[in-house]
Length: 565
Image (cartoon, rainbow, N blue to C red; front, side):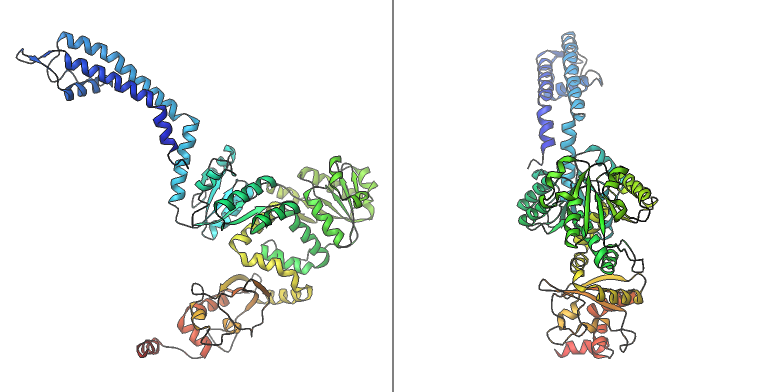
């Protein structure tokens, strides 16, 4: 890797000017050394090399202190006159070349790269590398900052880099002007650094995302990667590469529609985990019946698979005739070519018999127009929209649309949970295993604890739970120990164990009487008091002793116990 490209460019571009200055100085100095001078007593005198160099230096730079050490003779003055012309010219040429170099785009880029490399090399905090900058990565960076994680961005487009600069993030975000798939750029961004926690690539181009995943895996085989996928084939390719976090927003949206039809309580709990809604919000429910979907693209393909699996009657409207060739051959009778916001087209698709219409094109204006037309033809129809741009949120909210799905927000929530809260992401993946009835009971329990319960994790190890880790073999420790109130041991705190991860096996809603084992990872829900007490029991010798034995442990007893040992 060329860490000193900017220095090399300076040396290369300034080589000729340096030679010109050296040559003009040398000729001028030699002339002064050879020409006889005269001292104050009229005796012949020859300048020393230092005197000649000193005089030419301030003469060539037009400073002109005067003749030294004695007044010059006429031959010396004639030579100095000629020297002035070619030494000053040499300086002007050199300065002009230097100014041109400082304005050179390549030099400025190399200089910025060198500065960026130094900043990343000196970064001794955990950080995430973001490939590409947009509104989605901007929101993820803000969330990462809340968790104490820094951000490093690789972005080629100058306009997006300017937007990043205007965001004025605190702490500052380091940005590199380079192609995201360039291995050298990834190395400069610190992909091999032990402080690099993950790399995020959410480009719309699946081929580019796959290329980045392959390059990242070669540079750092253990790096955690969060890569966007929009097709099943891409997802399989990323799995083959070894990508840990694969984010397909359209599959997630289709799965949420599936849950809205079949398990709305599970959906509400999942959306609460994502931070999209509250536990007491009305259920997002969708009826069974005929669905009209406008747009057979990446989202349409995911919807087709899910709705067909649910036995839902579905019909598609697609304006691009080429996409009909990508539609399953056995189901091509369900897709019609035409404009989704055309009244006659919607009537021909039987909109009066449809229970819901999904506007899922990649153009927000088109989606709004489709749903507006559909409402006029069928006022009671349920409207579902795909919102592509976060900036259009207020427009969609004021359009009286029943349900809005935003792929950008899905990506933000998925990335934040997968990287910053992996336990939450794992819980959401397994939440359907609970079933609707258990989720209803769990939701009631959560609301009884608090209108906004806290979610937190605990791993049974020396770092997070030293007291539990040290006593786990000597004592029989049960999960119920962690809900003990430190104010009164006979009472329990408002705490719910949502999930346990043991040896890569997930157990949902573990039993309070189950035993604790080293390296168990728990996800809890509770209030602030329960979280505080749990952390005290896990970390504090005296609080652990009280919770387990039911008696206070003084420092005096602990001191003499150590002395006896």
